[in-house]
Every structure is written in C-alpha cells, then in structure tokens.
Length: 200
Length: 296
Image (cartoon, rainbow over the protein chains, first blue to last red):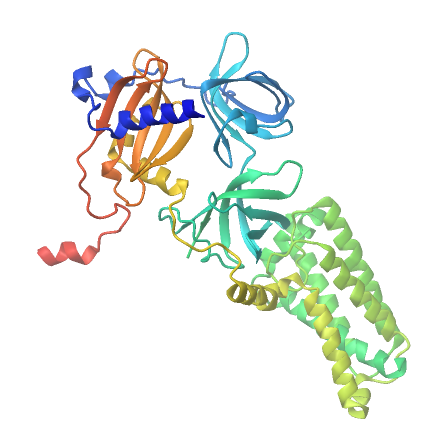
C-alpha cells in the first residue's frame, strides 16, 4: 500500500511539483511528427482489425485472459503493466471475473496473443427510455425490453445537454430518452450506470 | 345479475372497436403504424396497409352492429371470433417478429407483451359474456343508470390499464409524480471522474499529446486542487511510458491542464507540457451572435 502511495506521490510531484519541472524544449522538438513517432496501423477496409478482440471470458491465469468471441474465435489476451482496465470505473486486473464480457484493443503479438492496451469489461451503450425511477434505480425501456439500471453513488454521472458531467441525477424524468454507458451484470438484464446522457 | 351486465358488454366492445378502427381508417399515422406492425412481415410491405385498412373496416362494421339496438348473439359471437383472431395474430407476431409494434389501438409504438394478450383476453371474455344478452344496452342504462355506469367505468379502466398505448397519459404522469414526491435519485454537485476526463479532452495539452496515448484511463487520484489521471503512452522510439495529467478538480479551466511523461521503472521525467492558463469562460459556452454585430 505504501508503495502505491509513494509511486503516486512521485507521479504527482512530476506533474504538479514546480521544482521538478523539466524545460520541455530541452528534450528537442515538440512537433507531433518528431515526438509522436508511433506508426499508424491502418486496417484494410472490410478486413477484421487484428488488434481488437471481443467476447466473454472463459478463463483467467496469471496475466492472461482466455476469451471466446461472439463468432466463437478464441483469444488469449495478455494484461501488461500498461493496460488500462475499465469495469464501471478504471480498475485493476483482480476485479475481472470469468463470465464477464469484454472489448479489448492492443497489439497482436507473434505468438497469437493480444497484448492489451485497453480492456473494457462488460461495457454497454444503450439508447433507452426511462420507464420508471426507484431509489437509485432507473428502469429503462430498451426496444420493448426492460433493463434495470443501478446508480452507483460516487461513480455514476449524468451529462445534460452535452455539458460536463455532474453527479446530480435529479433532472432525469420518466418518459425521457437517455443514452446510458454502463457495466452489464453478466447474465442478467441489469446494468450499473457509469454515465447517463440526457436532455434537461 | 348477468341479465343486466351482459347487455352492457356490446357497448364496451363497440367503443373499443370503434377506437381501434379510427386509427386504422382515419389516422394519418396509419401507414406508419401498418409498416411497424407484424402485418408487414406476415403479408409483405405492399399488402400491409390494405390489410390494415381491411381489419379497420371489419372492426368499424362490427362496432356499428354491436352498438345498434337489436342485441343478437351472432354479434357477440363475431366479436369473440375477432378477439380470437387478434390473439392468434399477437401470438404470431410475438414469435415471428418480436420487435414489431402491436399497432392495435394507437400509432404509438407499443411492443407486444403480456398486457396486449391480457387485453385481448379481456375482449374475448366480454364477447362471451355478451352472448346471452337479450335486451339492448340502452334499456339497461335507462333501467339502472348507476350500476350500469359503474360496470362500464370498471370495464373501461381495466382496458385502459392493459393498454400500453395509453401509458403516457397516466402511468408516466403517476411515475413522474412519485419521483417528484420521493426524490429517489442522488442530488448534489461533487465532481465525477467523467467530468474531469471531459475537461482533459478539451484541453490544449491533450490536443497536442492525445496521439501518444495507447490506453484508456488507467488510474486516477485526487491531490488538493488537482485530479491526476494516468494513461499509458508510447514515446518516441516506442518506449512504454506513463502519461500523467494533472487536471483542475474544482474549477473548469482546460488551459490549466498539465502533463508529464514518466518512465515508471526509472522514475525519469521524459517530457512535461503545460499551456498558459487563459480562457476565462468555459469553452462550451456559446457566444451570443448579437455581440459580433454590435461592433460593426
């Protein structure tokens, strides 16, 4: 735990600590062409993107996720120190469970594994109508099917009319159209809501 | 008891059928409703609208017979047959085209669920109940106005409760009232992570450096006035580094965002960026057009 705090203190001081600020130009040109030499990986139109995977997790072993795609493709996804994992919020590898769905983007390695840069676990994007509102619960009507959206205090946010997000949900109305980004609870019709987009 | 309830059923049935026929024959939304219904799948796009109008015509004629004075068992039997037909149609639509709309009583999109079946069942029950009727409903209304009105109201209430098309007139209002009274959703204005990420994305520093990032948000924590967001990035030469952004936490000032690229194993700071904090107004506020004209 102290290791995390020390690391965070180091990174914080690197970015906001005035003393440790390095003159940016000391490192040479900052033009995007010079600094950002990452090769772009164009994919042929219509061809599957080799650096993208989706499916449900069938097994987890040290630093590796075994995933069965919706087209029954089998994926091995390598989780590295630089992998961002999202499961309702930016989180760590140990919260990922067998049975979760995921989208992953990264770099396909020669041994067939995908070294993931980003993994989004259970992420869903719904366009729905609010059918009813309960205590920290939105009942959503999604194409005639009922979806239960749970608000997670401290995490769920609302964006009204495209202004920055707030945690105030009180402007949501029954009958209104909303877009919901959230985390599906596997094998149920329930989601935990990360962001709800609405008009006010 | 049944002797005076039975003659009232044709009135209820007739009213529902007339209402339904009005949509199918007179509404200008009828073509759209026909296209959305399962008829389009059953008969093809071309024949959906004529068939829809035909059903409406049958409903209107039957409603006329039901409402007109002589109460004949044949009318009730025809209504029962029509209800059975509706039930069959709903069952077909539920199986063959579950995403189609019912198209029953209103052009409002209403998926076929248990309430549609329950309503058809109620219509069937009313038709069967009307079979033994011998007198006309006008006679019963004249004879015992109050009980008859109560039975009609109860019947209408049951049908309305089973009609998803009418939800927006009463169920949504009731739910909105409940929300206004109980206030079940969290209120308050503390700053969610999403808001900080949004501010970062609108910052000049992010615009310069976004092409470096290879991951989504990896980690975040608060430090006094700042919220620190950590991403993975690929620096020149392809080395994996951490992109550490500091975003103002409690104020909206995208120009104040700072970045440091840190090589975590060595703790070396590879690059820092910040831009002069200007932009007194949030950049999502829309300028008033009149202000530009006033100068000239």
